[in-house]
Length: 413
Ligand SMILES: Nc1ncnc2c1ncn2[C@@H]1O[C@H](COP(=O)(O)OP(=O)(O)O)[C@@H](O)[C@H]1O
Ligand SMILES: [Mg+2]
Image (cartoon, rainbow, N blue to C red; front, side, top):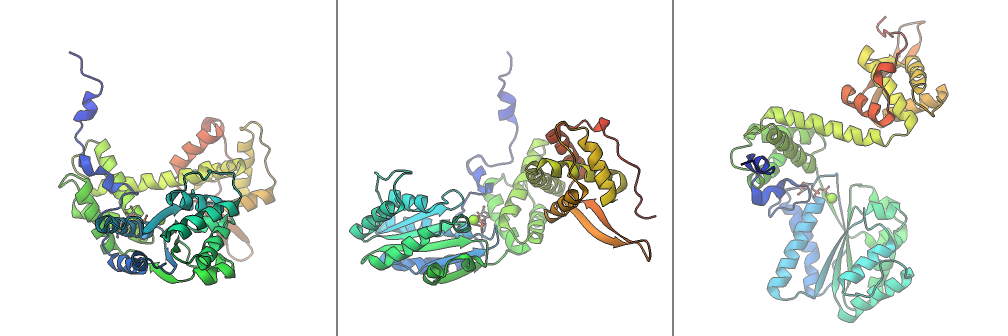
């Protein structure tokens, strides 16, 4: 009898523990957050007055990406909900978690609070802002509840010019007699407060909690917990954990990167049919992640920047490093192979070179070649050359065999 087409996929041994595989996903919030005990306690202490019907002072949480801000807040809110269920005080406090990457207008912030407070008739769009504000006001004023409003990645709201939601809510507190809204903002930017209008920052600035980057041993502890949850025993040894932690510690102590690096290494090992994850898998994972993140940036470049980067990569592949002059002539000849584009002038190209450098895709350096021989801008690719060339050939529909470059530049001459 023929095998069912699914059979061999089911039979493939997996390195993940079925029920807990999610523990290596970025959105997973574990039951324990090593090295964040102090932050958890401080946040809980800040919020605790809500359980006595008082509006806690507002707070801002700062820290670089991957330092556990979101995880800590979600953890504390989960504990708060658990406690309220246990004590049967479910209606007293309303934690509302919003991510301002998606909830990025004053209207949508108020709308989401209204929904959470049980105002079912509010429309997703269409009301004037002050009507929505009144709805929220009435809902709180009627019941005296305390809303703990977490605005994660709050910069998005402010950058889009929607900080008036903050003002309305802060102002509302002053009018409501019982209950109110406590705002917990989360930002990656220590200078966030400087972006706010004074009438907002003076009211919002209550508590301030700074999350510092994790060091390598701390990242190891975080990884160990997750490995234990997500993976079959014995597939990851300590050397692998240490390597992932060391890489992430170099990149500003980001736990998200540590976890996703490990996850990628596991996936590669699985793909190769290996029964254990080795350090070699971690190196491969690192390279893959780098390529993915470069690809994301490269895909969004404007067309001339793509052509220019392509020229720099070709020259870089052949000569190691190159100069503005060679890049310009290579760029012009590549343009001829792409229908519908006309080369930009040398000044614009020179500006584009600077932009690519600012984006970290290439390295530029002014080199002086000794007295009387002038100074030259030396240009080198700063991305994986082969993979990025293939990507650009796809994006620009270029046939590499058709392209011929100018003469070789030898910078060492
Ligand atoms: N102390 C910790 N213990 C366990 N996991 C953590 C810890 N800190 C961060 N993480 C995990 O790392 C990832 C990134 O953390 P996150 O809270 O999203 O960072 P931030 O919000 O500061 O950018 C998440 O998957 C999170 O669960
Ligand atoms: Mg976050």
